[in-house]
Image (cartoon, rainbow, N blue to C red; front, side, top):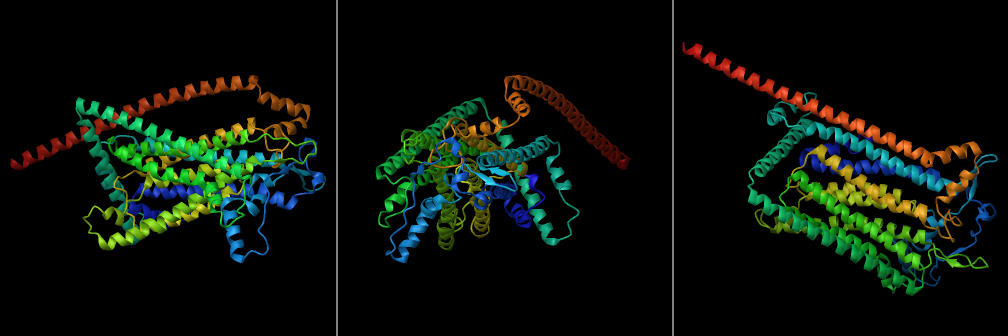
Length: 597
């Protein structure tokens, strides 16, 4: 996470969290800060290269890319405003519901894909800004930038873990005599440092206890534990499959209901017809409910598997990540399938005025609702459920009571981390369909930071399981990297295989989104075209892959050799330390003999 070290907000706050609640909890807040800075930079790219150029340079219909043939289709989704004789409260409810759904007035703004057109925007003298090309290149650049930032952070964490993974002969004495920072000149900072060292001792003692317990298991205990873990994994896979099936059923039902109403994506037209709003949010509600309830089962399951604290958080994170990514992928794939059946590839009639659906905007609205609903759920659970319950039970329950866990709940490190990973996954997956998602995610990071910090200060207590700093940070970034790959796959399928809507968007009229780049390449000179075609041919990829494989084999062999050297040097250091202990023991014995003489 040091890639954004040039700007470090909340530095003192995170240092205080580290001292009072442990380095594992501090790593979670470092992750929030990392995502805040990442999304802030993504927002700058999106605003300066997509939103502002379109609003400033959008031109009349004559300058659209009409050579593509179908740019005259009308979008099926229209905004129907309420009657003027309605009361003011009705207008407020109308605007609020359209805002949280991404429909109505908001649907035809820069917030969604369908608002844009395949235009050549004027830029300087005799120059144009190919908006269709810029739109997708910005998305590709943002994804590549995110990948580079994550790779840098993962590599840094990997180096730290190599150092932490070594087994020292005098671990506790090293912590006791080498942990203090002698540059500290403040009593407050010194107190925080003492708490941090104390937490480091707790982590080391927990690891030592687990290692001793694991070494003392007999064969019968190992066999019983193996079958127990096998049964737990079967339960986990069954739970994941059931959750995916529920999401599929709910999304299909929502689509069927929407089609029967024949309101397109729909606007909140009847204040009494509240079911339209609920049906629109039904997939988001079910996914959020599953993401909240199923991890509770996972945390209960993992207690029976008797893993170490570090591996416990890893396996729980892996299962919960699988749940959340599967929920997003099932949602998107179900939407793709449903929209394909309902005319995703509709074409214009002979008069060019067919009302064709803008399916990209609909996908963007679903992901927009997920993002908005996730913020509301975080605020609702923290401020309106956990906080009031804590106040009530803290005054009426004894500290030794079992209900004390409600008065002082543990900070859910795994669940909170997965919430942020899930939020970032929605941003990556949805920014193509909803360009304002990075802005929303940036604001969400700020809100979540202060809400979670409030919960820590007021009613939460540190996790009973202790986690190391570097291992937690590296693990969180690895989970984020896996989420990124899972989000890029469906987006890549859309770009290369699905036909864009003929009624909306900067790629209407193209066979695929990627065709916009292919069309632009055709306008280049023969020399540049030949160079680009060579980079995309087997004549380049086959030698490149072979070279990479050879380089991979070389660096792997070098790493194995270096590891052997490190192990040899470590053994020599241990032997030298033992020799010194032996000499000190002998000198002490000789000294005692001379005293007796």
